[in-house]
Structures are given as C-alpha cells and as structure tokens.
Image 1 (cartoon, one colour):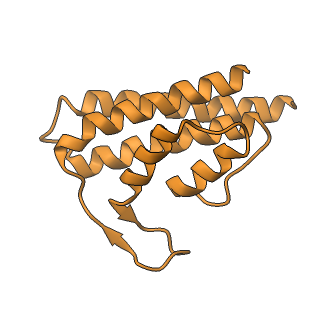
Image 2 (cartoon, helix red, strand yellow):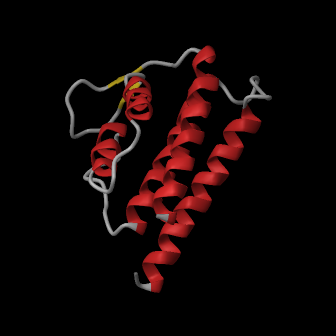
Length: 133
C-alpha cells in the first residue's frame, strides 16, 4: 500500500472516531442535538469508518448510501449480517441520494439513537478488524 493511501484511510478512521465521539456526547445534550442531527452525525461516523476500511483494502463504494457501503464491504470480506440489517433499517429514515427515485426524510425516533450508536460502534470495530487483518 502506498503511503498516500495509508494516510487517507487513517484520516477517514480518525474522522469516523470523532463523529462517533460527538454523537456519544450529543446524546447528553438533547436540546442541541436532536434525533435528526444525531442520525446524521452517526451516519457520517459509519460512512467514514466503512470508507476507511475500504480504502485500506484498495476499494471504494459506488455511492455513499448504507446499501452501497454494505455492498462494497461485502467485496472485501463482508460485514456481519446483523450490522447490515441495522444499516438498512437506518437507511429507511432518509433517502436523499439524487441517483434514486423517492426522495424522503423522516426524523428517527429519539429511542432509536442508542441502537444507532451501538451499530456505529460495531461498524467501527469491524473496520478496525478488517484493516488489521
């Protein structure tokens, strides 16, 4: 792996870590961090961690929807199906990608946020393990 790619994937992992840390802290400040804001921060953490792992393996996703990230992850060793199921569930809250018909946004319920953070933590662990392998 070239040094440039290594730096890039490490930057993505670091950014994902920071987004996840922000989400964890944001849960404690619901007046500022609404469920919708947390959903998007958690989504960024997930995207950064998956992209970091993919870059470390010389792969990129076609797009950045959770479905596209799952598909790309499956090309580099796969992601646990329970994690993939959770990501598909979370994707149902927002479809804002212009490539697909049916644009919609629904604010996730506040009760879903702890589950989303747990899934983001599972994605983080998956990415770290894939990179280390």
